[in-house]
Length: 459
Image (tube, rainbow, N blue to C red; front, top):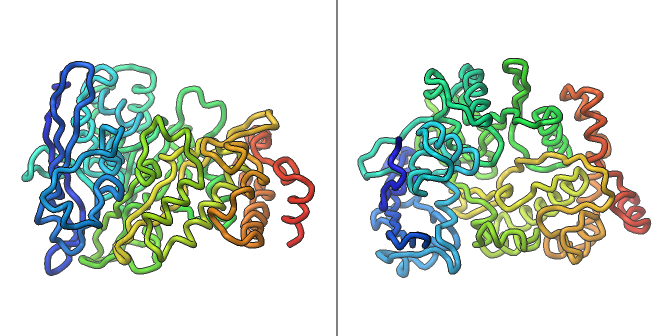
């Protein structure tokens, strides 16, 4: 059985372009510590940036709230602590495994649920974790490559099913689980590489699924792409009679050694070419950008994200990102995606502009229901979480100042969503899945009053 106590001090690494040739590599960014306290009390964490790291040309801040480097002299050599009321750093927390990843680690180490030290969960997530951070025990520790391959998907699927069922994982499947521990969320998933070495997130079916979630999410993401939203590449894959969804990891890009992602380019659209190497893009959650804890997130709304974008993201992206955020909120209203919590919104660091920007869209799945009155997870407008277009428009100025421009965004999204059946049929949805999804997809008149609906239709 693993040591459930774990270390009290670990090294955080950042993947940056470094040295005269700008080679992408992991460099030590700082030291994370937790002080042992009495039983029942949360450990107090502290972090100190490495002085050499702060002097590196392409160094990035690990967390724009708790570990900001804007005030360089105040940070240099200082011991930093989490934000008031929190016991961890959001930017580092985002590099830790989420619910599913923790279950995988516990199963692999054969320990009870939630029995490991938080630093152990961080260490066991592996070097293919989301973003550009890695966590290791010592300065000279080697990275751990954890992603599987497409050919390992049958074994990953079997191992994931065993974990979900609470069964012991067969010994011959243990070695395939490395890429599963780095994945976030609660559903089974794993990071895998295709034949070109491009990294994808594979999402597996879960116990209790009542319909084909892979086809539903694939079709919804393609629908979002048609609505003008920024969506990474997606694929459907059949394994052992099951539909699997593959989503291109948008925290990775391919370029010549020492070359940053080209200005205006999207990481998930870069391709492998001879001599190219993989670069990593720092990524944080909406939870981190707002500087709040999981318990506080239920009181937050889309306008809070828009406000954080204006304060912490690079000026180059503010107008675009706020408009896209508004469009995503409207899309979620149309398709009844109420899993829009702050961990399902992310921000990537743009090394060309040296600032944060909204990441591509992910984790969007309609929720079938019969209720006429529906709610999102995040607040929409003056009527709280109520999922209507009137509510969305009540605070449109937080995203898009001019009403006609906001209406134009709604019109664009509606124009795509009203063709949802075509997108689902193109994805191979069965008649029964179309029937199931029909209770999630909302007509314009379901979510807008007569006057607003007429205004939207006018274009």
